[in-house]
Image (tube, rainbow, N blue to C red; front, top):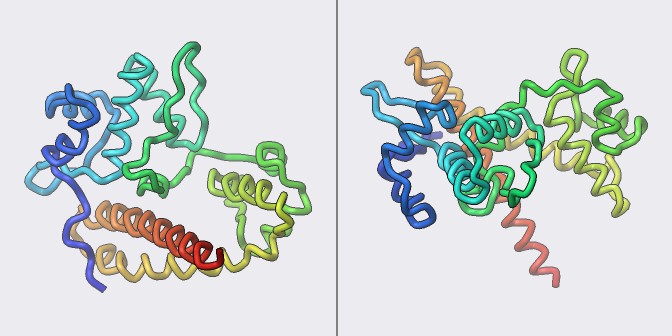
Length: 237
C-alpha cells in the first residue's frame, strides 16, 4: 500500500485556515507560540515547519483560550499538558468553557490517538473513576477490551470503562462489545501495513512520519465508521 504523499500543512496554509476565525493571527504569532512550547510542529530535512491537523487543532485551542478566556500562556500550557495526559484542566473562575480540544471539522482528530502514557491508575482508581463494577472490569479484561499494563491501567482503559458504564444503561453488556474489539484489531492491522515500510527505513524522520501517518489514518477510520453507522441507521428509519 502507498503512503499518502503529503499529510501535513505549511505554516502559510495553517495561517490561511485560522485567519477566518482569528483575523489577527500572524505567522510571527504562530512562531512565538512554538517558541513558548505550546505547539511542536515537525521539521523537514531542510528546516521547514510541517504541521499536522493535530497541530492545527492545538493552535485553535490556544487562540480560543486567549480570546474567550483571556488566559495567560502559562495557564494554557498547563491546561494542554493536562489534556495530553487525559486529565481535565482545572476550571477558571468566571471564564467561559472551551472545547477539550477544538476539532478541525467537528470530528475525531489525529491528536486523539496520541498515547496517554502518563496516566497510571490502580484497579480501585479505575473502578471509582469510571463507575463500572469489579465484575464488569473482569469481564472486559476477559474479552480483551481493557488491558492492564504492568501494574496500572492507562487513559485508554479509563475511556473504555467510562463508555461501557454509559452504554450498559441500555442493556448492552461486555460480551456484546467483542465485535468492536475485533473491528479495531483489523483497523490496527491495516494501519500497520501502511507504516511498516516507513519503520524499516533508516531515515531518522521515518519513525515520526510513521506516527503521524498512523494517527491520520486512525482519525479517518473513526470518521468512516461513524458515517457508515449513521447511514445504516438512516436506512432503518
